Length: 473
Image (cartoon, rainbow, N blue to C red; front, side):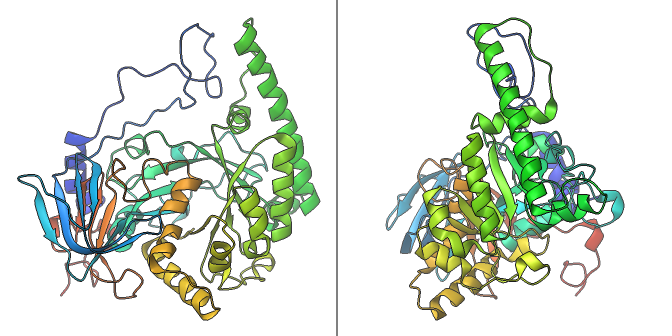
């Protein structure tokens, strides 16, 4: 079965509107495939190109509304126009084209769609049973050969819940954190589709999930194998990066000089992509000292850490993060569930912001992804109590622009700027209130959720007949 909108009506729409792979697909890079080098051809590192095609929308003007532009700007009694999937204009006065849908946003707030940089939706879908547990290939400390997208189940009801309850329009799905090298992550648009390729954010770089600290040493030390300590973690990391550097050297030489191609290694393909700057490192790490060590290791082998995830102690090294242009994705107040998570403070996000570092919220949870706006509200309140002056509009960067930056897609989404994707949420009030809900959510200008339209209110078959589903009064 599946979601009423996600599979019944949603898949019916998807069957008619989901895009097909382009006919001019480019030859694949040797970072993923090994074609003979041919002069005049461009190589693309993705052997599974996105088939994402936006759902159709109509020109829409929202008027008389408070706007957070996602980059720290705020417009009171503003207007925003989007058409053909893009933001067209934003400001105090915007002229609507003939035939545009006009929405009066009095008392409401418009923001960019929320981006969750750390999710496992689709890889750990609902219902949460062992048969659906496909997010962690915990069979060795180095599994850079696995790709999260190959486990994503598009029918996971969590996707529609994140859309409707949380205003989430884009998310990164990562492998789990048992391994030092967990595999490739994938960035998805939160749309209904039959396959993961129909959800893949067009042009988004892949990520490499890495992990440090307790998880790898606990999982593999318990099996009597390396790593069993933090120094073992780094030893395996460095040995793996050394092999990757040699692998890259051989392939670079072949692509320059020709001859017989080196042997393919799927795991090393991914690491070569990191060393070439094509794939972004997304590193699970809690302790400040370990984040510092990882930053040193990145310099040793010539790669860049795009973001540390969880970052409970990120506030201790805000200056290092800023200097290395590395973002921190954190929670508002999760702590104490293992030793490396004890030295947490509620002011983590505000301290990072005040230090000029790139900071953001993340969920790592199928329920938390539905309330990321409230998580930011908690962190913002803690910061203000501590004396930090941070505006609501600035805090919204923690939900949209900064995660877009860490995912390499800030030129396409994450803020309401003309020419960017029309990923837009209309909130029924102040989005930092526990009473706030998305009233409407557009992705690429297509209205995919409307609180006031039963046809655009997703309900999964796993929840039919439950209070709040619309089927029980």
